[in-house]
Amino acid sequence: MIPVLFHLGPLTVYSYGLMMALGFLAADYVIRLECIRRGFDPEYSSSIVIVAAVTGLVGSRIYAILDDLPTYLADPKSMIFSGSGFVFYGGMIGGILGAYFVSRWYRIGFAVTMDMCGPALALGQAIGRIGCQLSGDGDWGLPSTLPWAMAYPRAIVGWNSETVLKLDEHYRLVSGYFPGVRVHPAPVYETILYLGVFAILWSMRKTAHPAGRLIYWYLVLAGAARFLVEFVRVNPRVFHGLSEAQLIAVAMMAIGGVALIITREKDQAESGQPPGEKNQRPAMNAARA
Image (cartoon, rainbow, N blue to C red; front, side, top):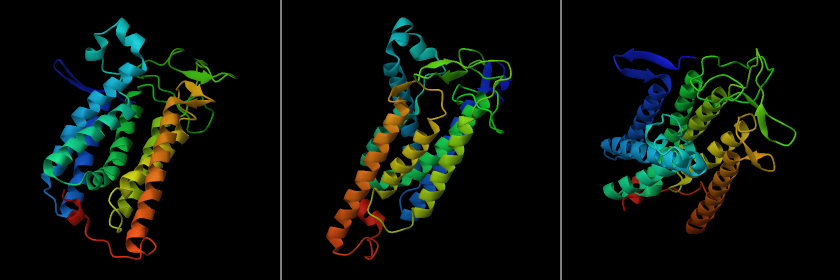
């Protein structure tokens, strides 16, 4: 664990911030490769990443505020000055809105744009979770005795009875701290799973498919990854032993799954053949609005 990398005078460089920046750079590189392959202006990738980064951070903070409104109302300054309080799902929504406006500006199909963003999103998440692991920002899991379970004694949020939690028989979070306690390294699990999602989507990108298919698969696969990890994450259970993040993950999988079925049926109806038997037009020809 290395929460703080180094100091440059009054400037503190945090490992989480560095990994977030690397995640954006990796996403930019992946999208740029796709822009080149599809014949788009490579600068399109930077425009998407910059705008999506800004709108994503705003969306993430807004989601965090709405999710814990009483806390923020009690201390409004924390909305501006706090270094915590960023939620991925809010960031994803904000980032998608940003990408939409950029796609409209460049007159490139939104579905094609999101297909290019799908693998980049998964890779960015994987790198971002490395930052969670290095900083110990509280994204670890429940107490565990597994061989790879670990402690976070230098966690930036503290390693104590208020941050090390477990579930009681009623699925309520209670203190699970005791000397020598170890927990599931949930950020490591997520990094591995999201790298797997990236590998799958990256391998699918050159296969002929209707625009939007990759981002729909992202919703299914990333949703499934988060749903599974949440079983060992330290998050309140809100519905039949499931966390809020799991309910959102289920919605992601449902939306992605339904969209895949609809696009497959539509593609089959238009071609008069089972999907995969027709030659698809180049994606960039159908992408221009």
